[in-house]
Amino acid sequence: MNPVRSFGPDLVMGDFSHFWLYVVGPMLGTLLAVGAAHALRGGGGDAIAERAAQGTLNTP
Image 1 (cartoon, rainbow, N blue to C red):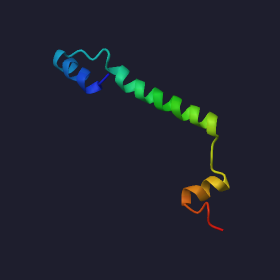
Image 2: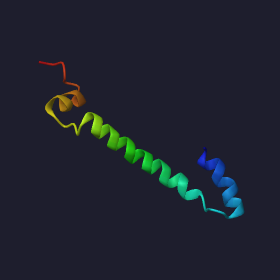
Image 3: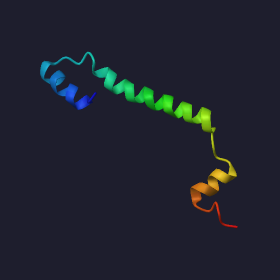
Image 4: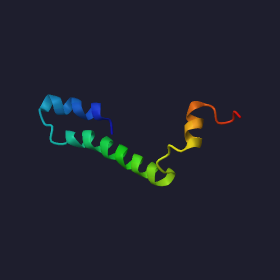
């Protein structure tokens, strides 16, 4: 479902009754994805994760 493809006809007709779905849907999906990633991988922030983020994981 393309939000722009649906928004054009809605704009011409002046009917925005379903537009909320295109705003709330991606936000809800993002929150669910972040929650699932946190549940599966944890919060992060430990020493190994910090070194990996800095690119110094394999240095002595």
